[in-house]
Image 1 (tube, rainbow, N blue to C red):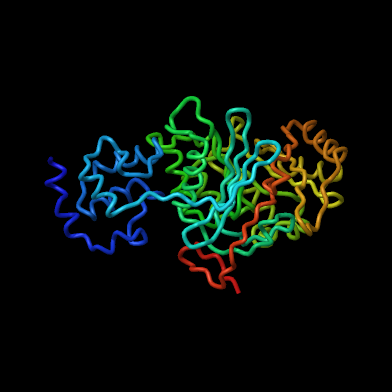
Image 2 (cartoon, one colour):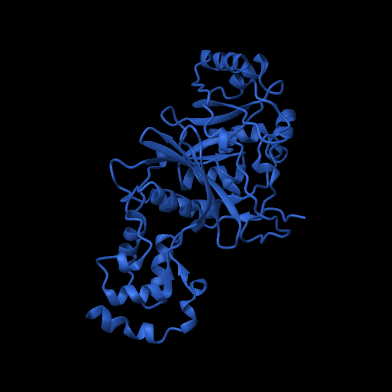
Length: 387
């Protein structure tokens, strides 16, 4: 009854056009402080923020009518003002090895890809941070698609929420949860969308919500130096560096951002990353390209390059895509490369390709979103405008 009296005027004074979902406020992706502020703005008590947070991120509820500890009248009021989004599944493909790739359609019609990589009853989710990518790495299929825009925090978290829906993985705190790890290795450069990625990961790590440990989250970057330090201080998640070459001349070709932030600068940033220790190593990602970066000299150079940094090296057999400019190194070359690294005392797992048959493997993701000619500098954190 108290809720009914307190909030009855809120409904009667609402503009009828607010029933249109486009005029409602999406609660997904708001930080806790933002959620409190939006409730206060609509004359709702801030203690409701914790209730909503738990329902959204602990229980996966997207319908206010299912929130049993909130009165029916308040449920109706909330549904008049707010909504809780999910991306739409445009299509899905299941690999022979069980990997699932979803093509997700966003509200503006753009598309992204998200990949679930199962390991028995548990697994890892590979999520995207941008529509397209601005880095144009020569071996990456996503790099052939120009940047369209950054994803919002809601669109980043939404990938996780949707997959947990698909896996029936609620409540999130279950000991038998399926989703146990997240990697930001999908479409885009996460550190070129840092603020939205930061908000999304803080939501994902919050103990009252999805509650995934920072030790179970890996952020992969091609080396955006100014943001690496911020990421270490703010988030402390695992760091993976997309390296792929041991000298600037070759890395300039393979990973063009190296022309701006070279290997020496990258190593300095990695050495100062807040959470790197013998217990928490940096991962160096190294795609194996036949005749390009896969000889014995390259392996020895790599060992010398990372000397003194607690590290493991992921050797990634190149996953080919239509008209790709490279071929994958053969098994003998990859194994010989790995032996040199392991002999130097570094873990050097050879990544088993997953989802190749549905173009879901590392470096194969690409949506069909249209390119836009201009990108709002505010929303893309000063990324250069596209021509």
